Length: 295
Image 1: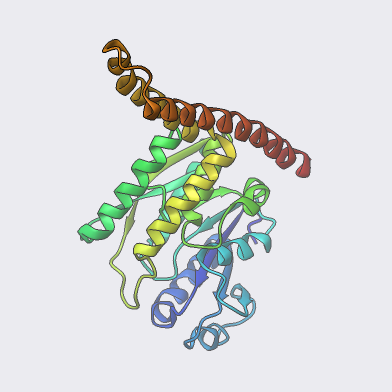
Image 2: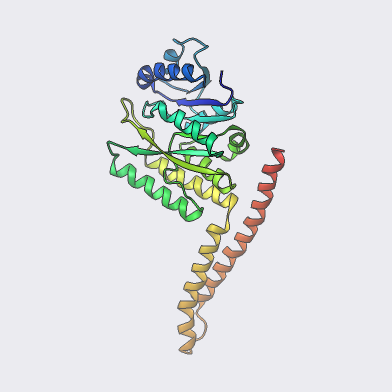
């Protein structure tokens, strides 16, 4: 058994996809001596029965009694491994297994902490989903120095010990993929990106929807407030103060006194500024607790 890499596949109602994809993955893991961990995240179809058809030696099976969510399933898989690296792939059969070996070799050769597989949609993707991913990426880039294009890619390889260190900061939802990458970036770990290929989904239906996008944006805001709150509070403060000055100064120059609205805007801006300073101090304490708990 290779003591360096575990492949984690979260599964939720993927019976049809796994029937064709799983034998291929098992054969690949045997050839390369990788550990395979499948997490059945409370499936309501025959996924559990399908997985039980295989030998216990083929893979490690983790069963969540209830559906915890995409991130919750991955977190359960990470908690079950002590290998140096973990790589996550989706159960829908869209990933090429040769890209697993590609990312594994690259994270070792470049001594990186995480490598994100940047997807190349040969067959294209829907305009709606593409627009949603673009919006999430732009918001994330505004709030963090982000050099990763496909931040929500399901294929990522990263250092297991670092992942375990930050798991409690990551959500159980589909936003996990975005947040784990943003945490690594915000903590100044080396995060790189390399191209991978994806196939069209053979069967089943994606769990990604409009609500997923809103949840992801909310989790991005949460993680930025945790690690770099002034990225949010300072712009709001400056916009409020500058807009109030632009409104109030002409009124003063006309001899009409001080505008109540301008004073309210300046006060609001100052409140946001001092809230940002307070959040910055809380962030420093939280970051110190993260380091202390993992020493």
